[in-house]
Structure formats: structure tokens, C-alpha cells
Image (cartoon, helix red, strand yellow):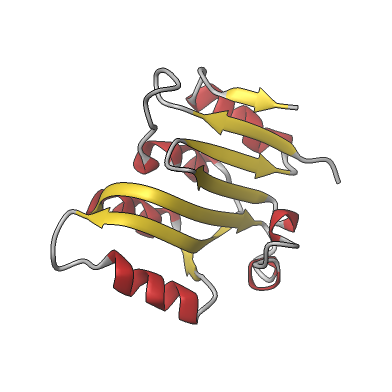
Length: 142
């Protein structure tokens, strides 16, 4: 299975693209289940604890979320320093392909890398095309 990778930066490579902007193309992709495997950062309010959320994620080996839930989470975050989101048209794969050795067998892997840029790794060229349209400054990695 061939995989494709695209890196997303802000307007220039020194600017970080906000998570709520990066996930927007996901709403245009039909039929994908989404699972949040990891998130770290700071929340907008004291009512919302990223640490508690990550504990729940860890206990359940990730949480299945829809696009609207993911978008709401983004708006509760002041900053995101790390994130790992997977997607697949076969929801069962999201429960199996969660370890480092098989993580990239999911159809989509979105990862915020080293607090600097986003990487999308996918086996679906349409995903790459969708993100490239949304982020013309992005770079497709061979």
C-alpha cells in the first residue's frame, strides 16, 4: 500500500498552524471514523483539564469522536503542543492500529510534530489533495 505525506505550516515555516484550522479539511472527507490518541497543551479555562482528558484517552486507548466534537475540543484549547489523530473508513481498524508499529496502517494519521508543524500521512491520495487545496503552502514529502 502506497502512502503519502504532507507537512502543514502556517503562512511561513516559523508560524504554527492552529489545530482548528488543520482539522477543517476532515469535514470534507466522507466516511472516515476519527479517533483521538493523544493531545497535550493548555486549555482556555480552569474548568477544562487537558491532563484529565489525556487520562481518559489513555484508559480507553483513544476516544472515538466526530468532527464536531473534535472542533469543539480545539476551541477549548489555548495551545496544543502535541496531538495524534487517526482516521479510517473501517472503524474497527481504529481499535487495532494504535501501537507505534502499526499506527500508520490507518488510512489517515494527523500528527502535530515537535510543537512545530503538522504531518498528515495517508494511503488515500484524495486526502492529500484535500489538504493541499486547504493549505497551498503545504509541502508534499516524497
